[in-house]
Amino acid sequence: MTNYDYDVMFIGSGHANWHAAVALTQAGKKVVLIEKDLIAGTCTNYGCNAKILLDGAADVIHQAAAYQKKGLAGNLKINWPELMAYKHETIDPIHQLLEQQFAAAGVDVVKGVASFVDQHTVIVDEKQITATDIIIGTGQKPNRLPISGKEFLHDSREFLDLPELPEHMTFIGAGIVSLEFAMLVQAAGTKVSVIEFADSALRGFEKKYVDKALAKMKVLGIDIHFNEAVKAVSQTNSGFLVTTASGLAVETNYIVDATGRIPNIAELNLEKVGVNFDRTGILVDDHLQTNVAHIYASGDVIAKKIPKLTPTATFESNYLAALLSNQTTAAIQYPAIASVVFTLPRIAQVGITSQEATATPEKYHLATIPFGARLKFQTKNEPDAEATLVFDQENYLVGASVYGDEAPELINFLTMIISQKLTLSKLNKAIFAFPSQTIGLLSMLSPYLKK
Image (cartoon, rainbow, N blue to C red; front, side):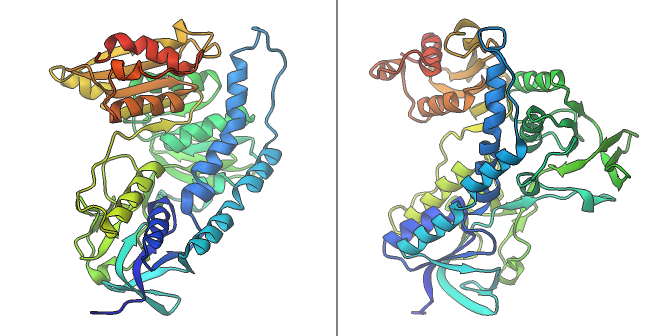
């Protein structure tokens, strides 16, 4: 039997890997994490965590506006340098704390770029490291448009580290990153433009709620341009000029390329060992194994149609921990996956969409719950808050879309109902806090839910 340095090697230390690394170490495996950047990956250091912290200030201003002339007076204002200092104070130490926790758990950490030598070996800074099993969890990296002036574009990581906000900011793309950041900086006083190649935004989310968010953005003064292909960016005396194929010209001071993310695999030398991949990521089977024995993939680096989210990566990491510790031999089975766009208000989605339900009426039916209009006292005066629910023919809840400030918490509650196939009789065995949006929404969906 061949002796390798480790039982399991993880390339990348984000959520796609570190949960399994700790669990397998606790199960008695010898484990190593290899990381070329900050320990714990994108979400922890320069993604979700930083985003939601900065968003908190804008969310407070947004919710306070609902009570203007209804008992609340005065204007709130974001001090961006102070907010950014708070972000650094809170976020910057996390990777060091996690690295200490990994060491305490017995996980070896190696810093550097891993490149495959053979099916069981990688080289990191001229040092070869071997393992019985290797898991690739290197995630994605920002796409960069191949246009003239691309050197003037910034990505989300750079945006989340801005010490000062410019007078005008332009986002290329109308996806999650652009719309979330656009509303954040608008709340801080920056003028915003969004330029999108397609004719719509946020595909995959409830269109009527996306349209509500876009209408809200326009009221706030955010300029949104659809059907525009950015052709070039040039430097001017006062900033930059973004031009499109149709002739649109936008003068701006800072440009974020938010046209998507691509698999972070260029440095892995996958061709050396014959691991199959395409432009969307590494190809795996229903056990997250590549076409090469003993090499697996986890998280956003996988080529998959399901949402590439931190909780999905964590789920996959936990699955691989169970698989490689012989706790299961079953294929991975994904539950309903909840997604949220942190616009102001929020948009959330889980399970079967209303578009799917409408296309197959023999399988599903819909219910619209205008809980904001009916429950103003529970929603902090948010009359537009609404949920669209999808039920199967047995009246089990199988999908939901929510528009509102508390959409993230409400979608989590609805996800639990879907995942556990909870009926009304089961839910009635619990006593929820009142008044709350959760119990308010529950009372309104009860007539539709399986008894």
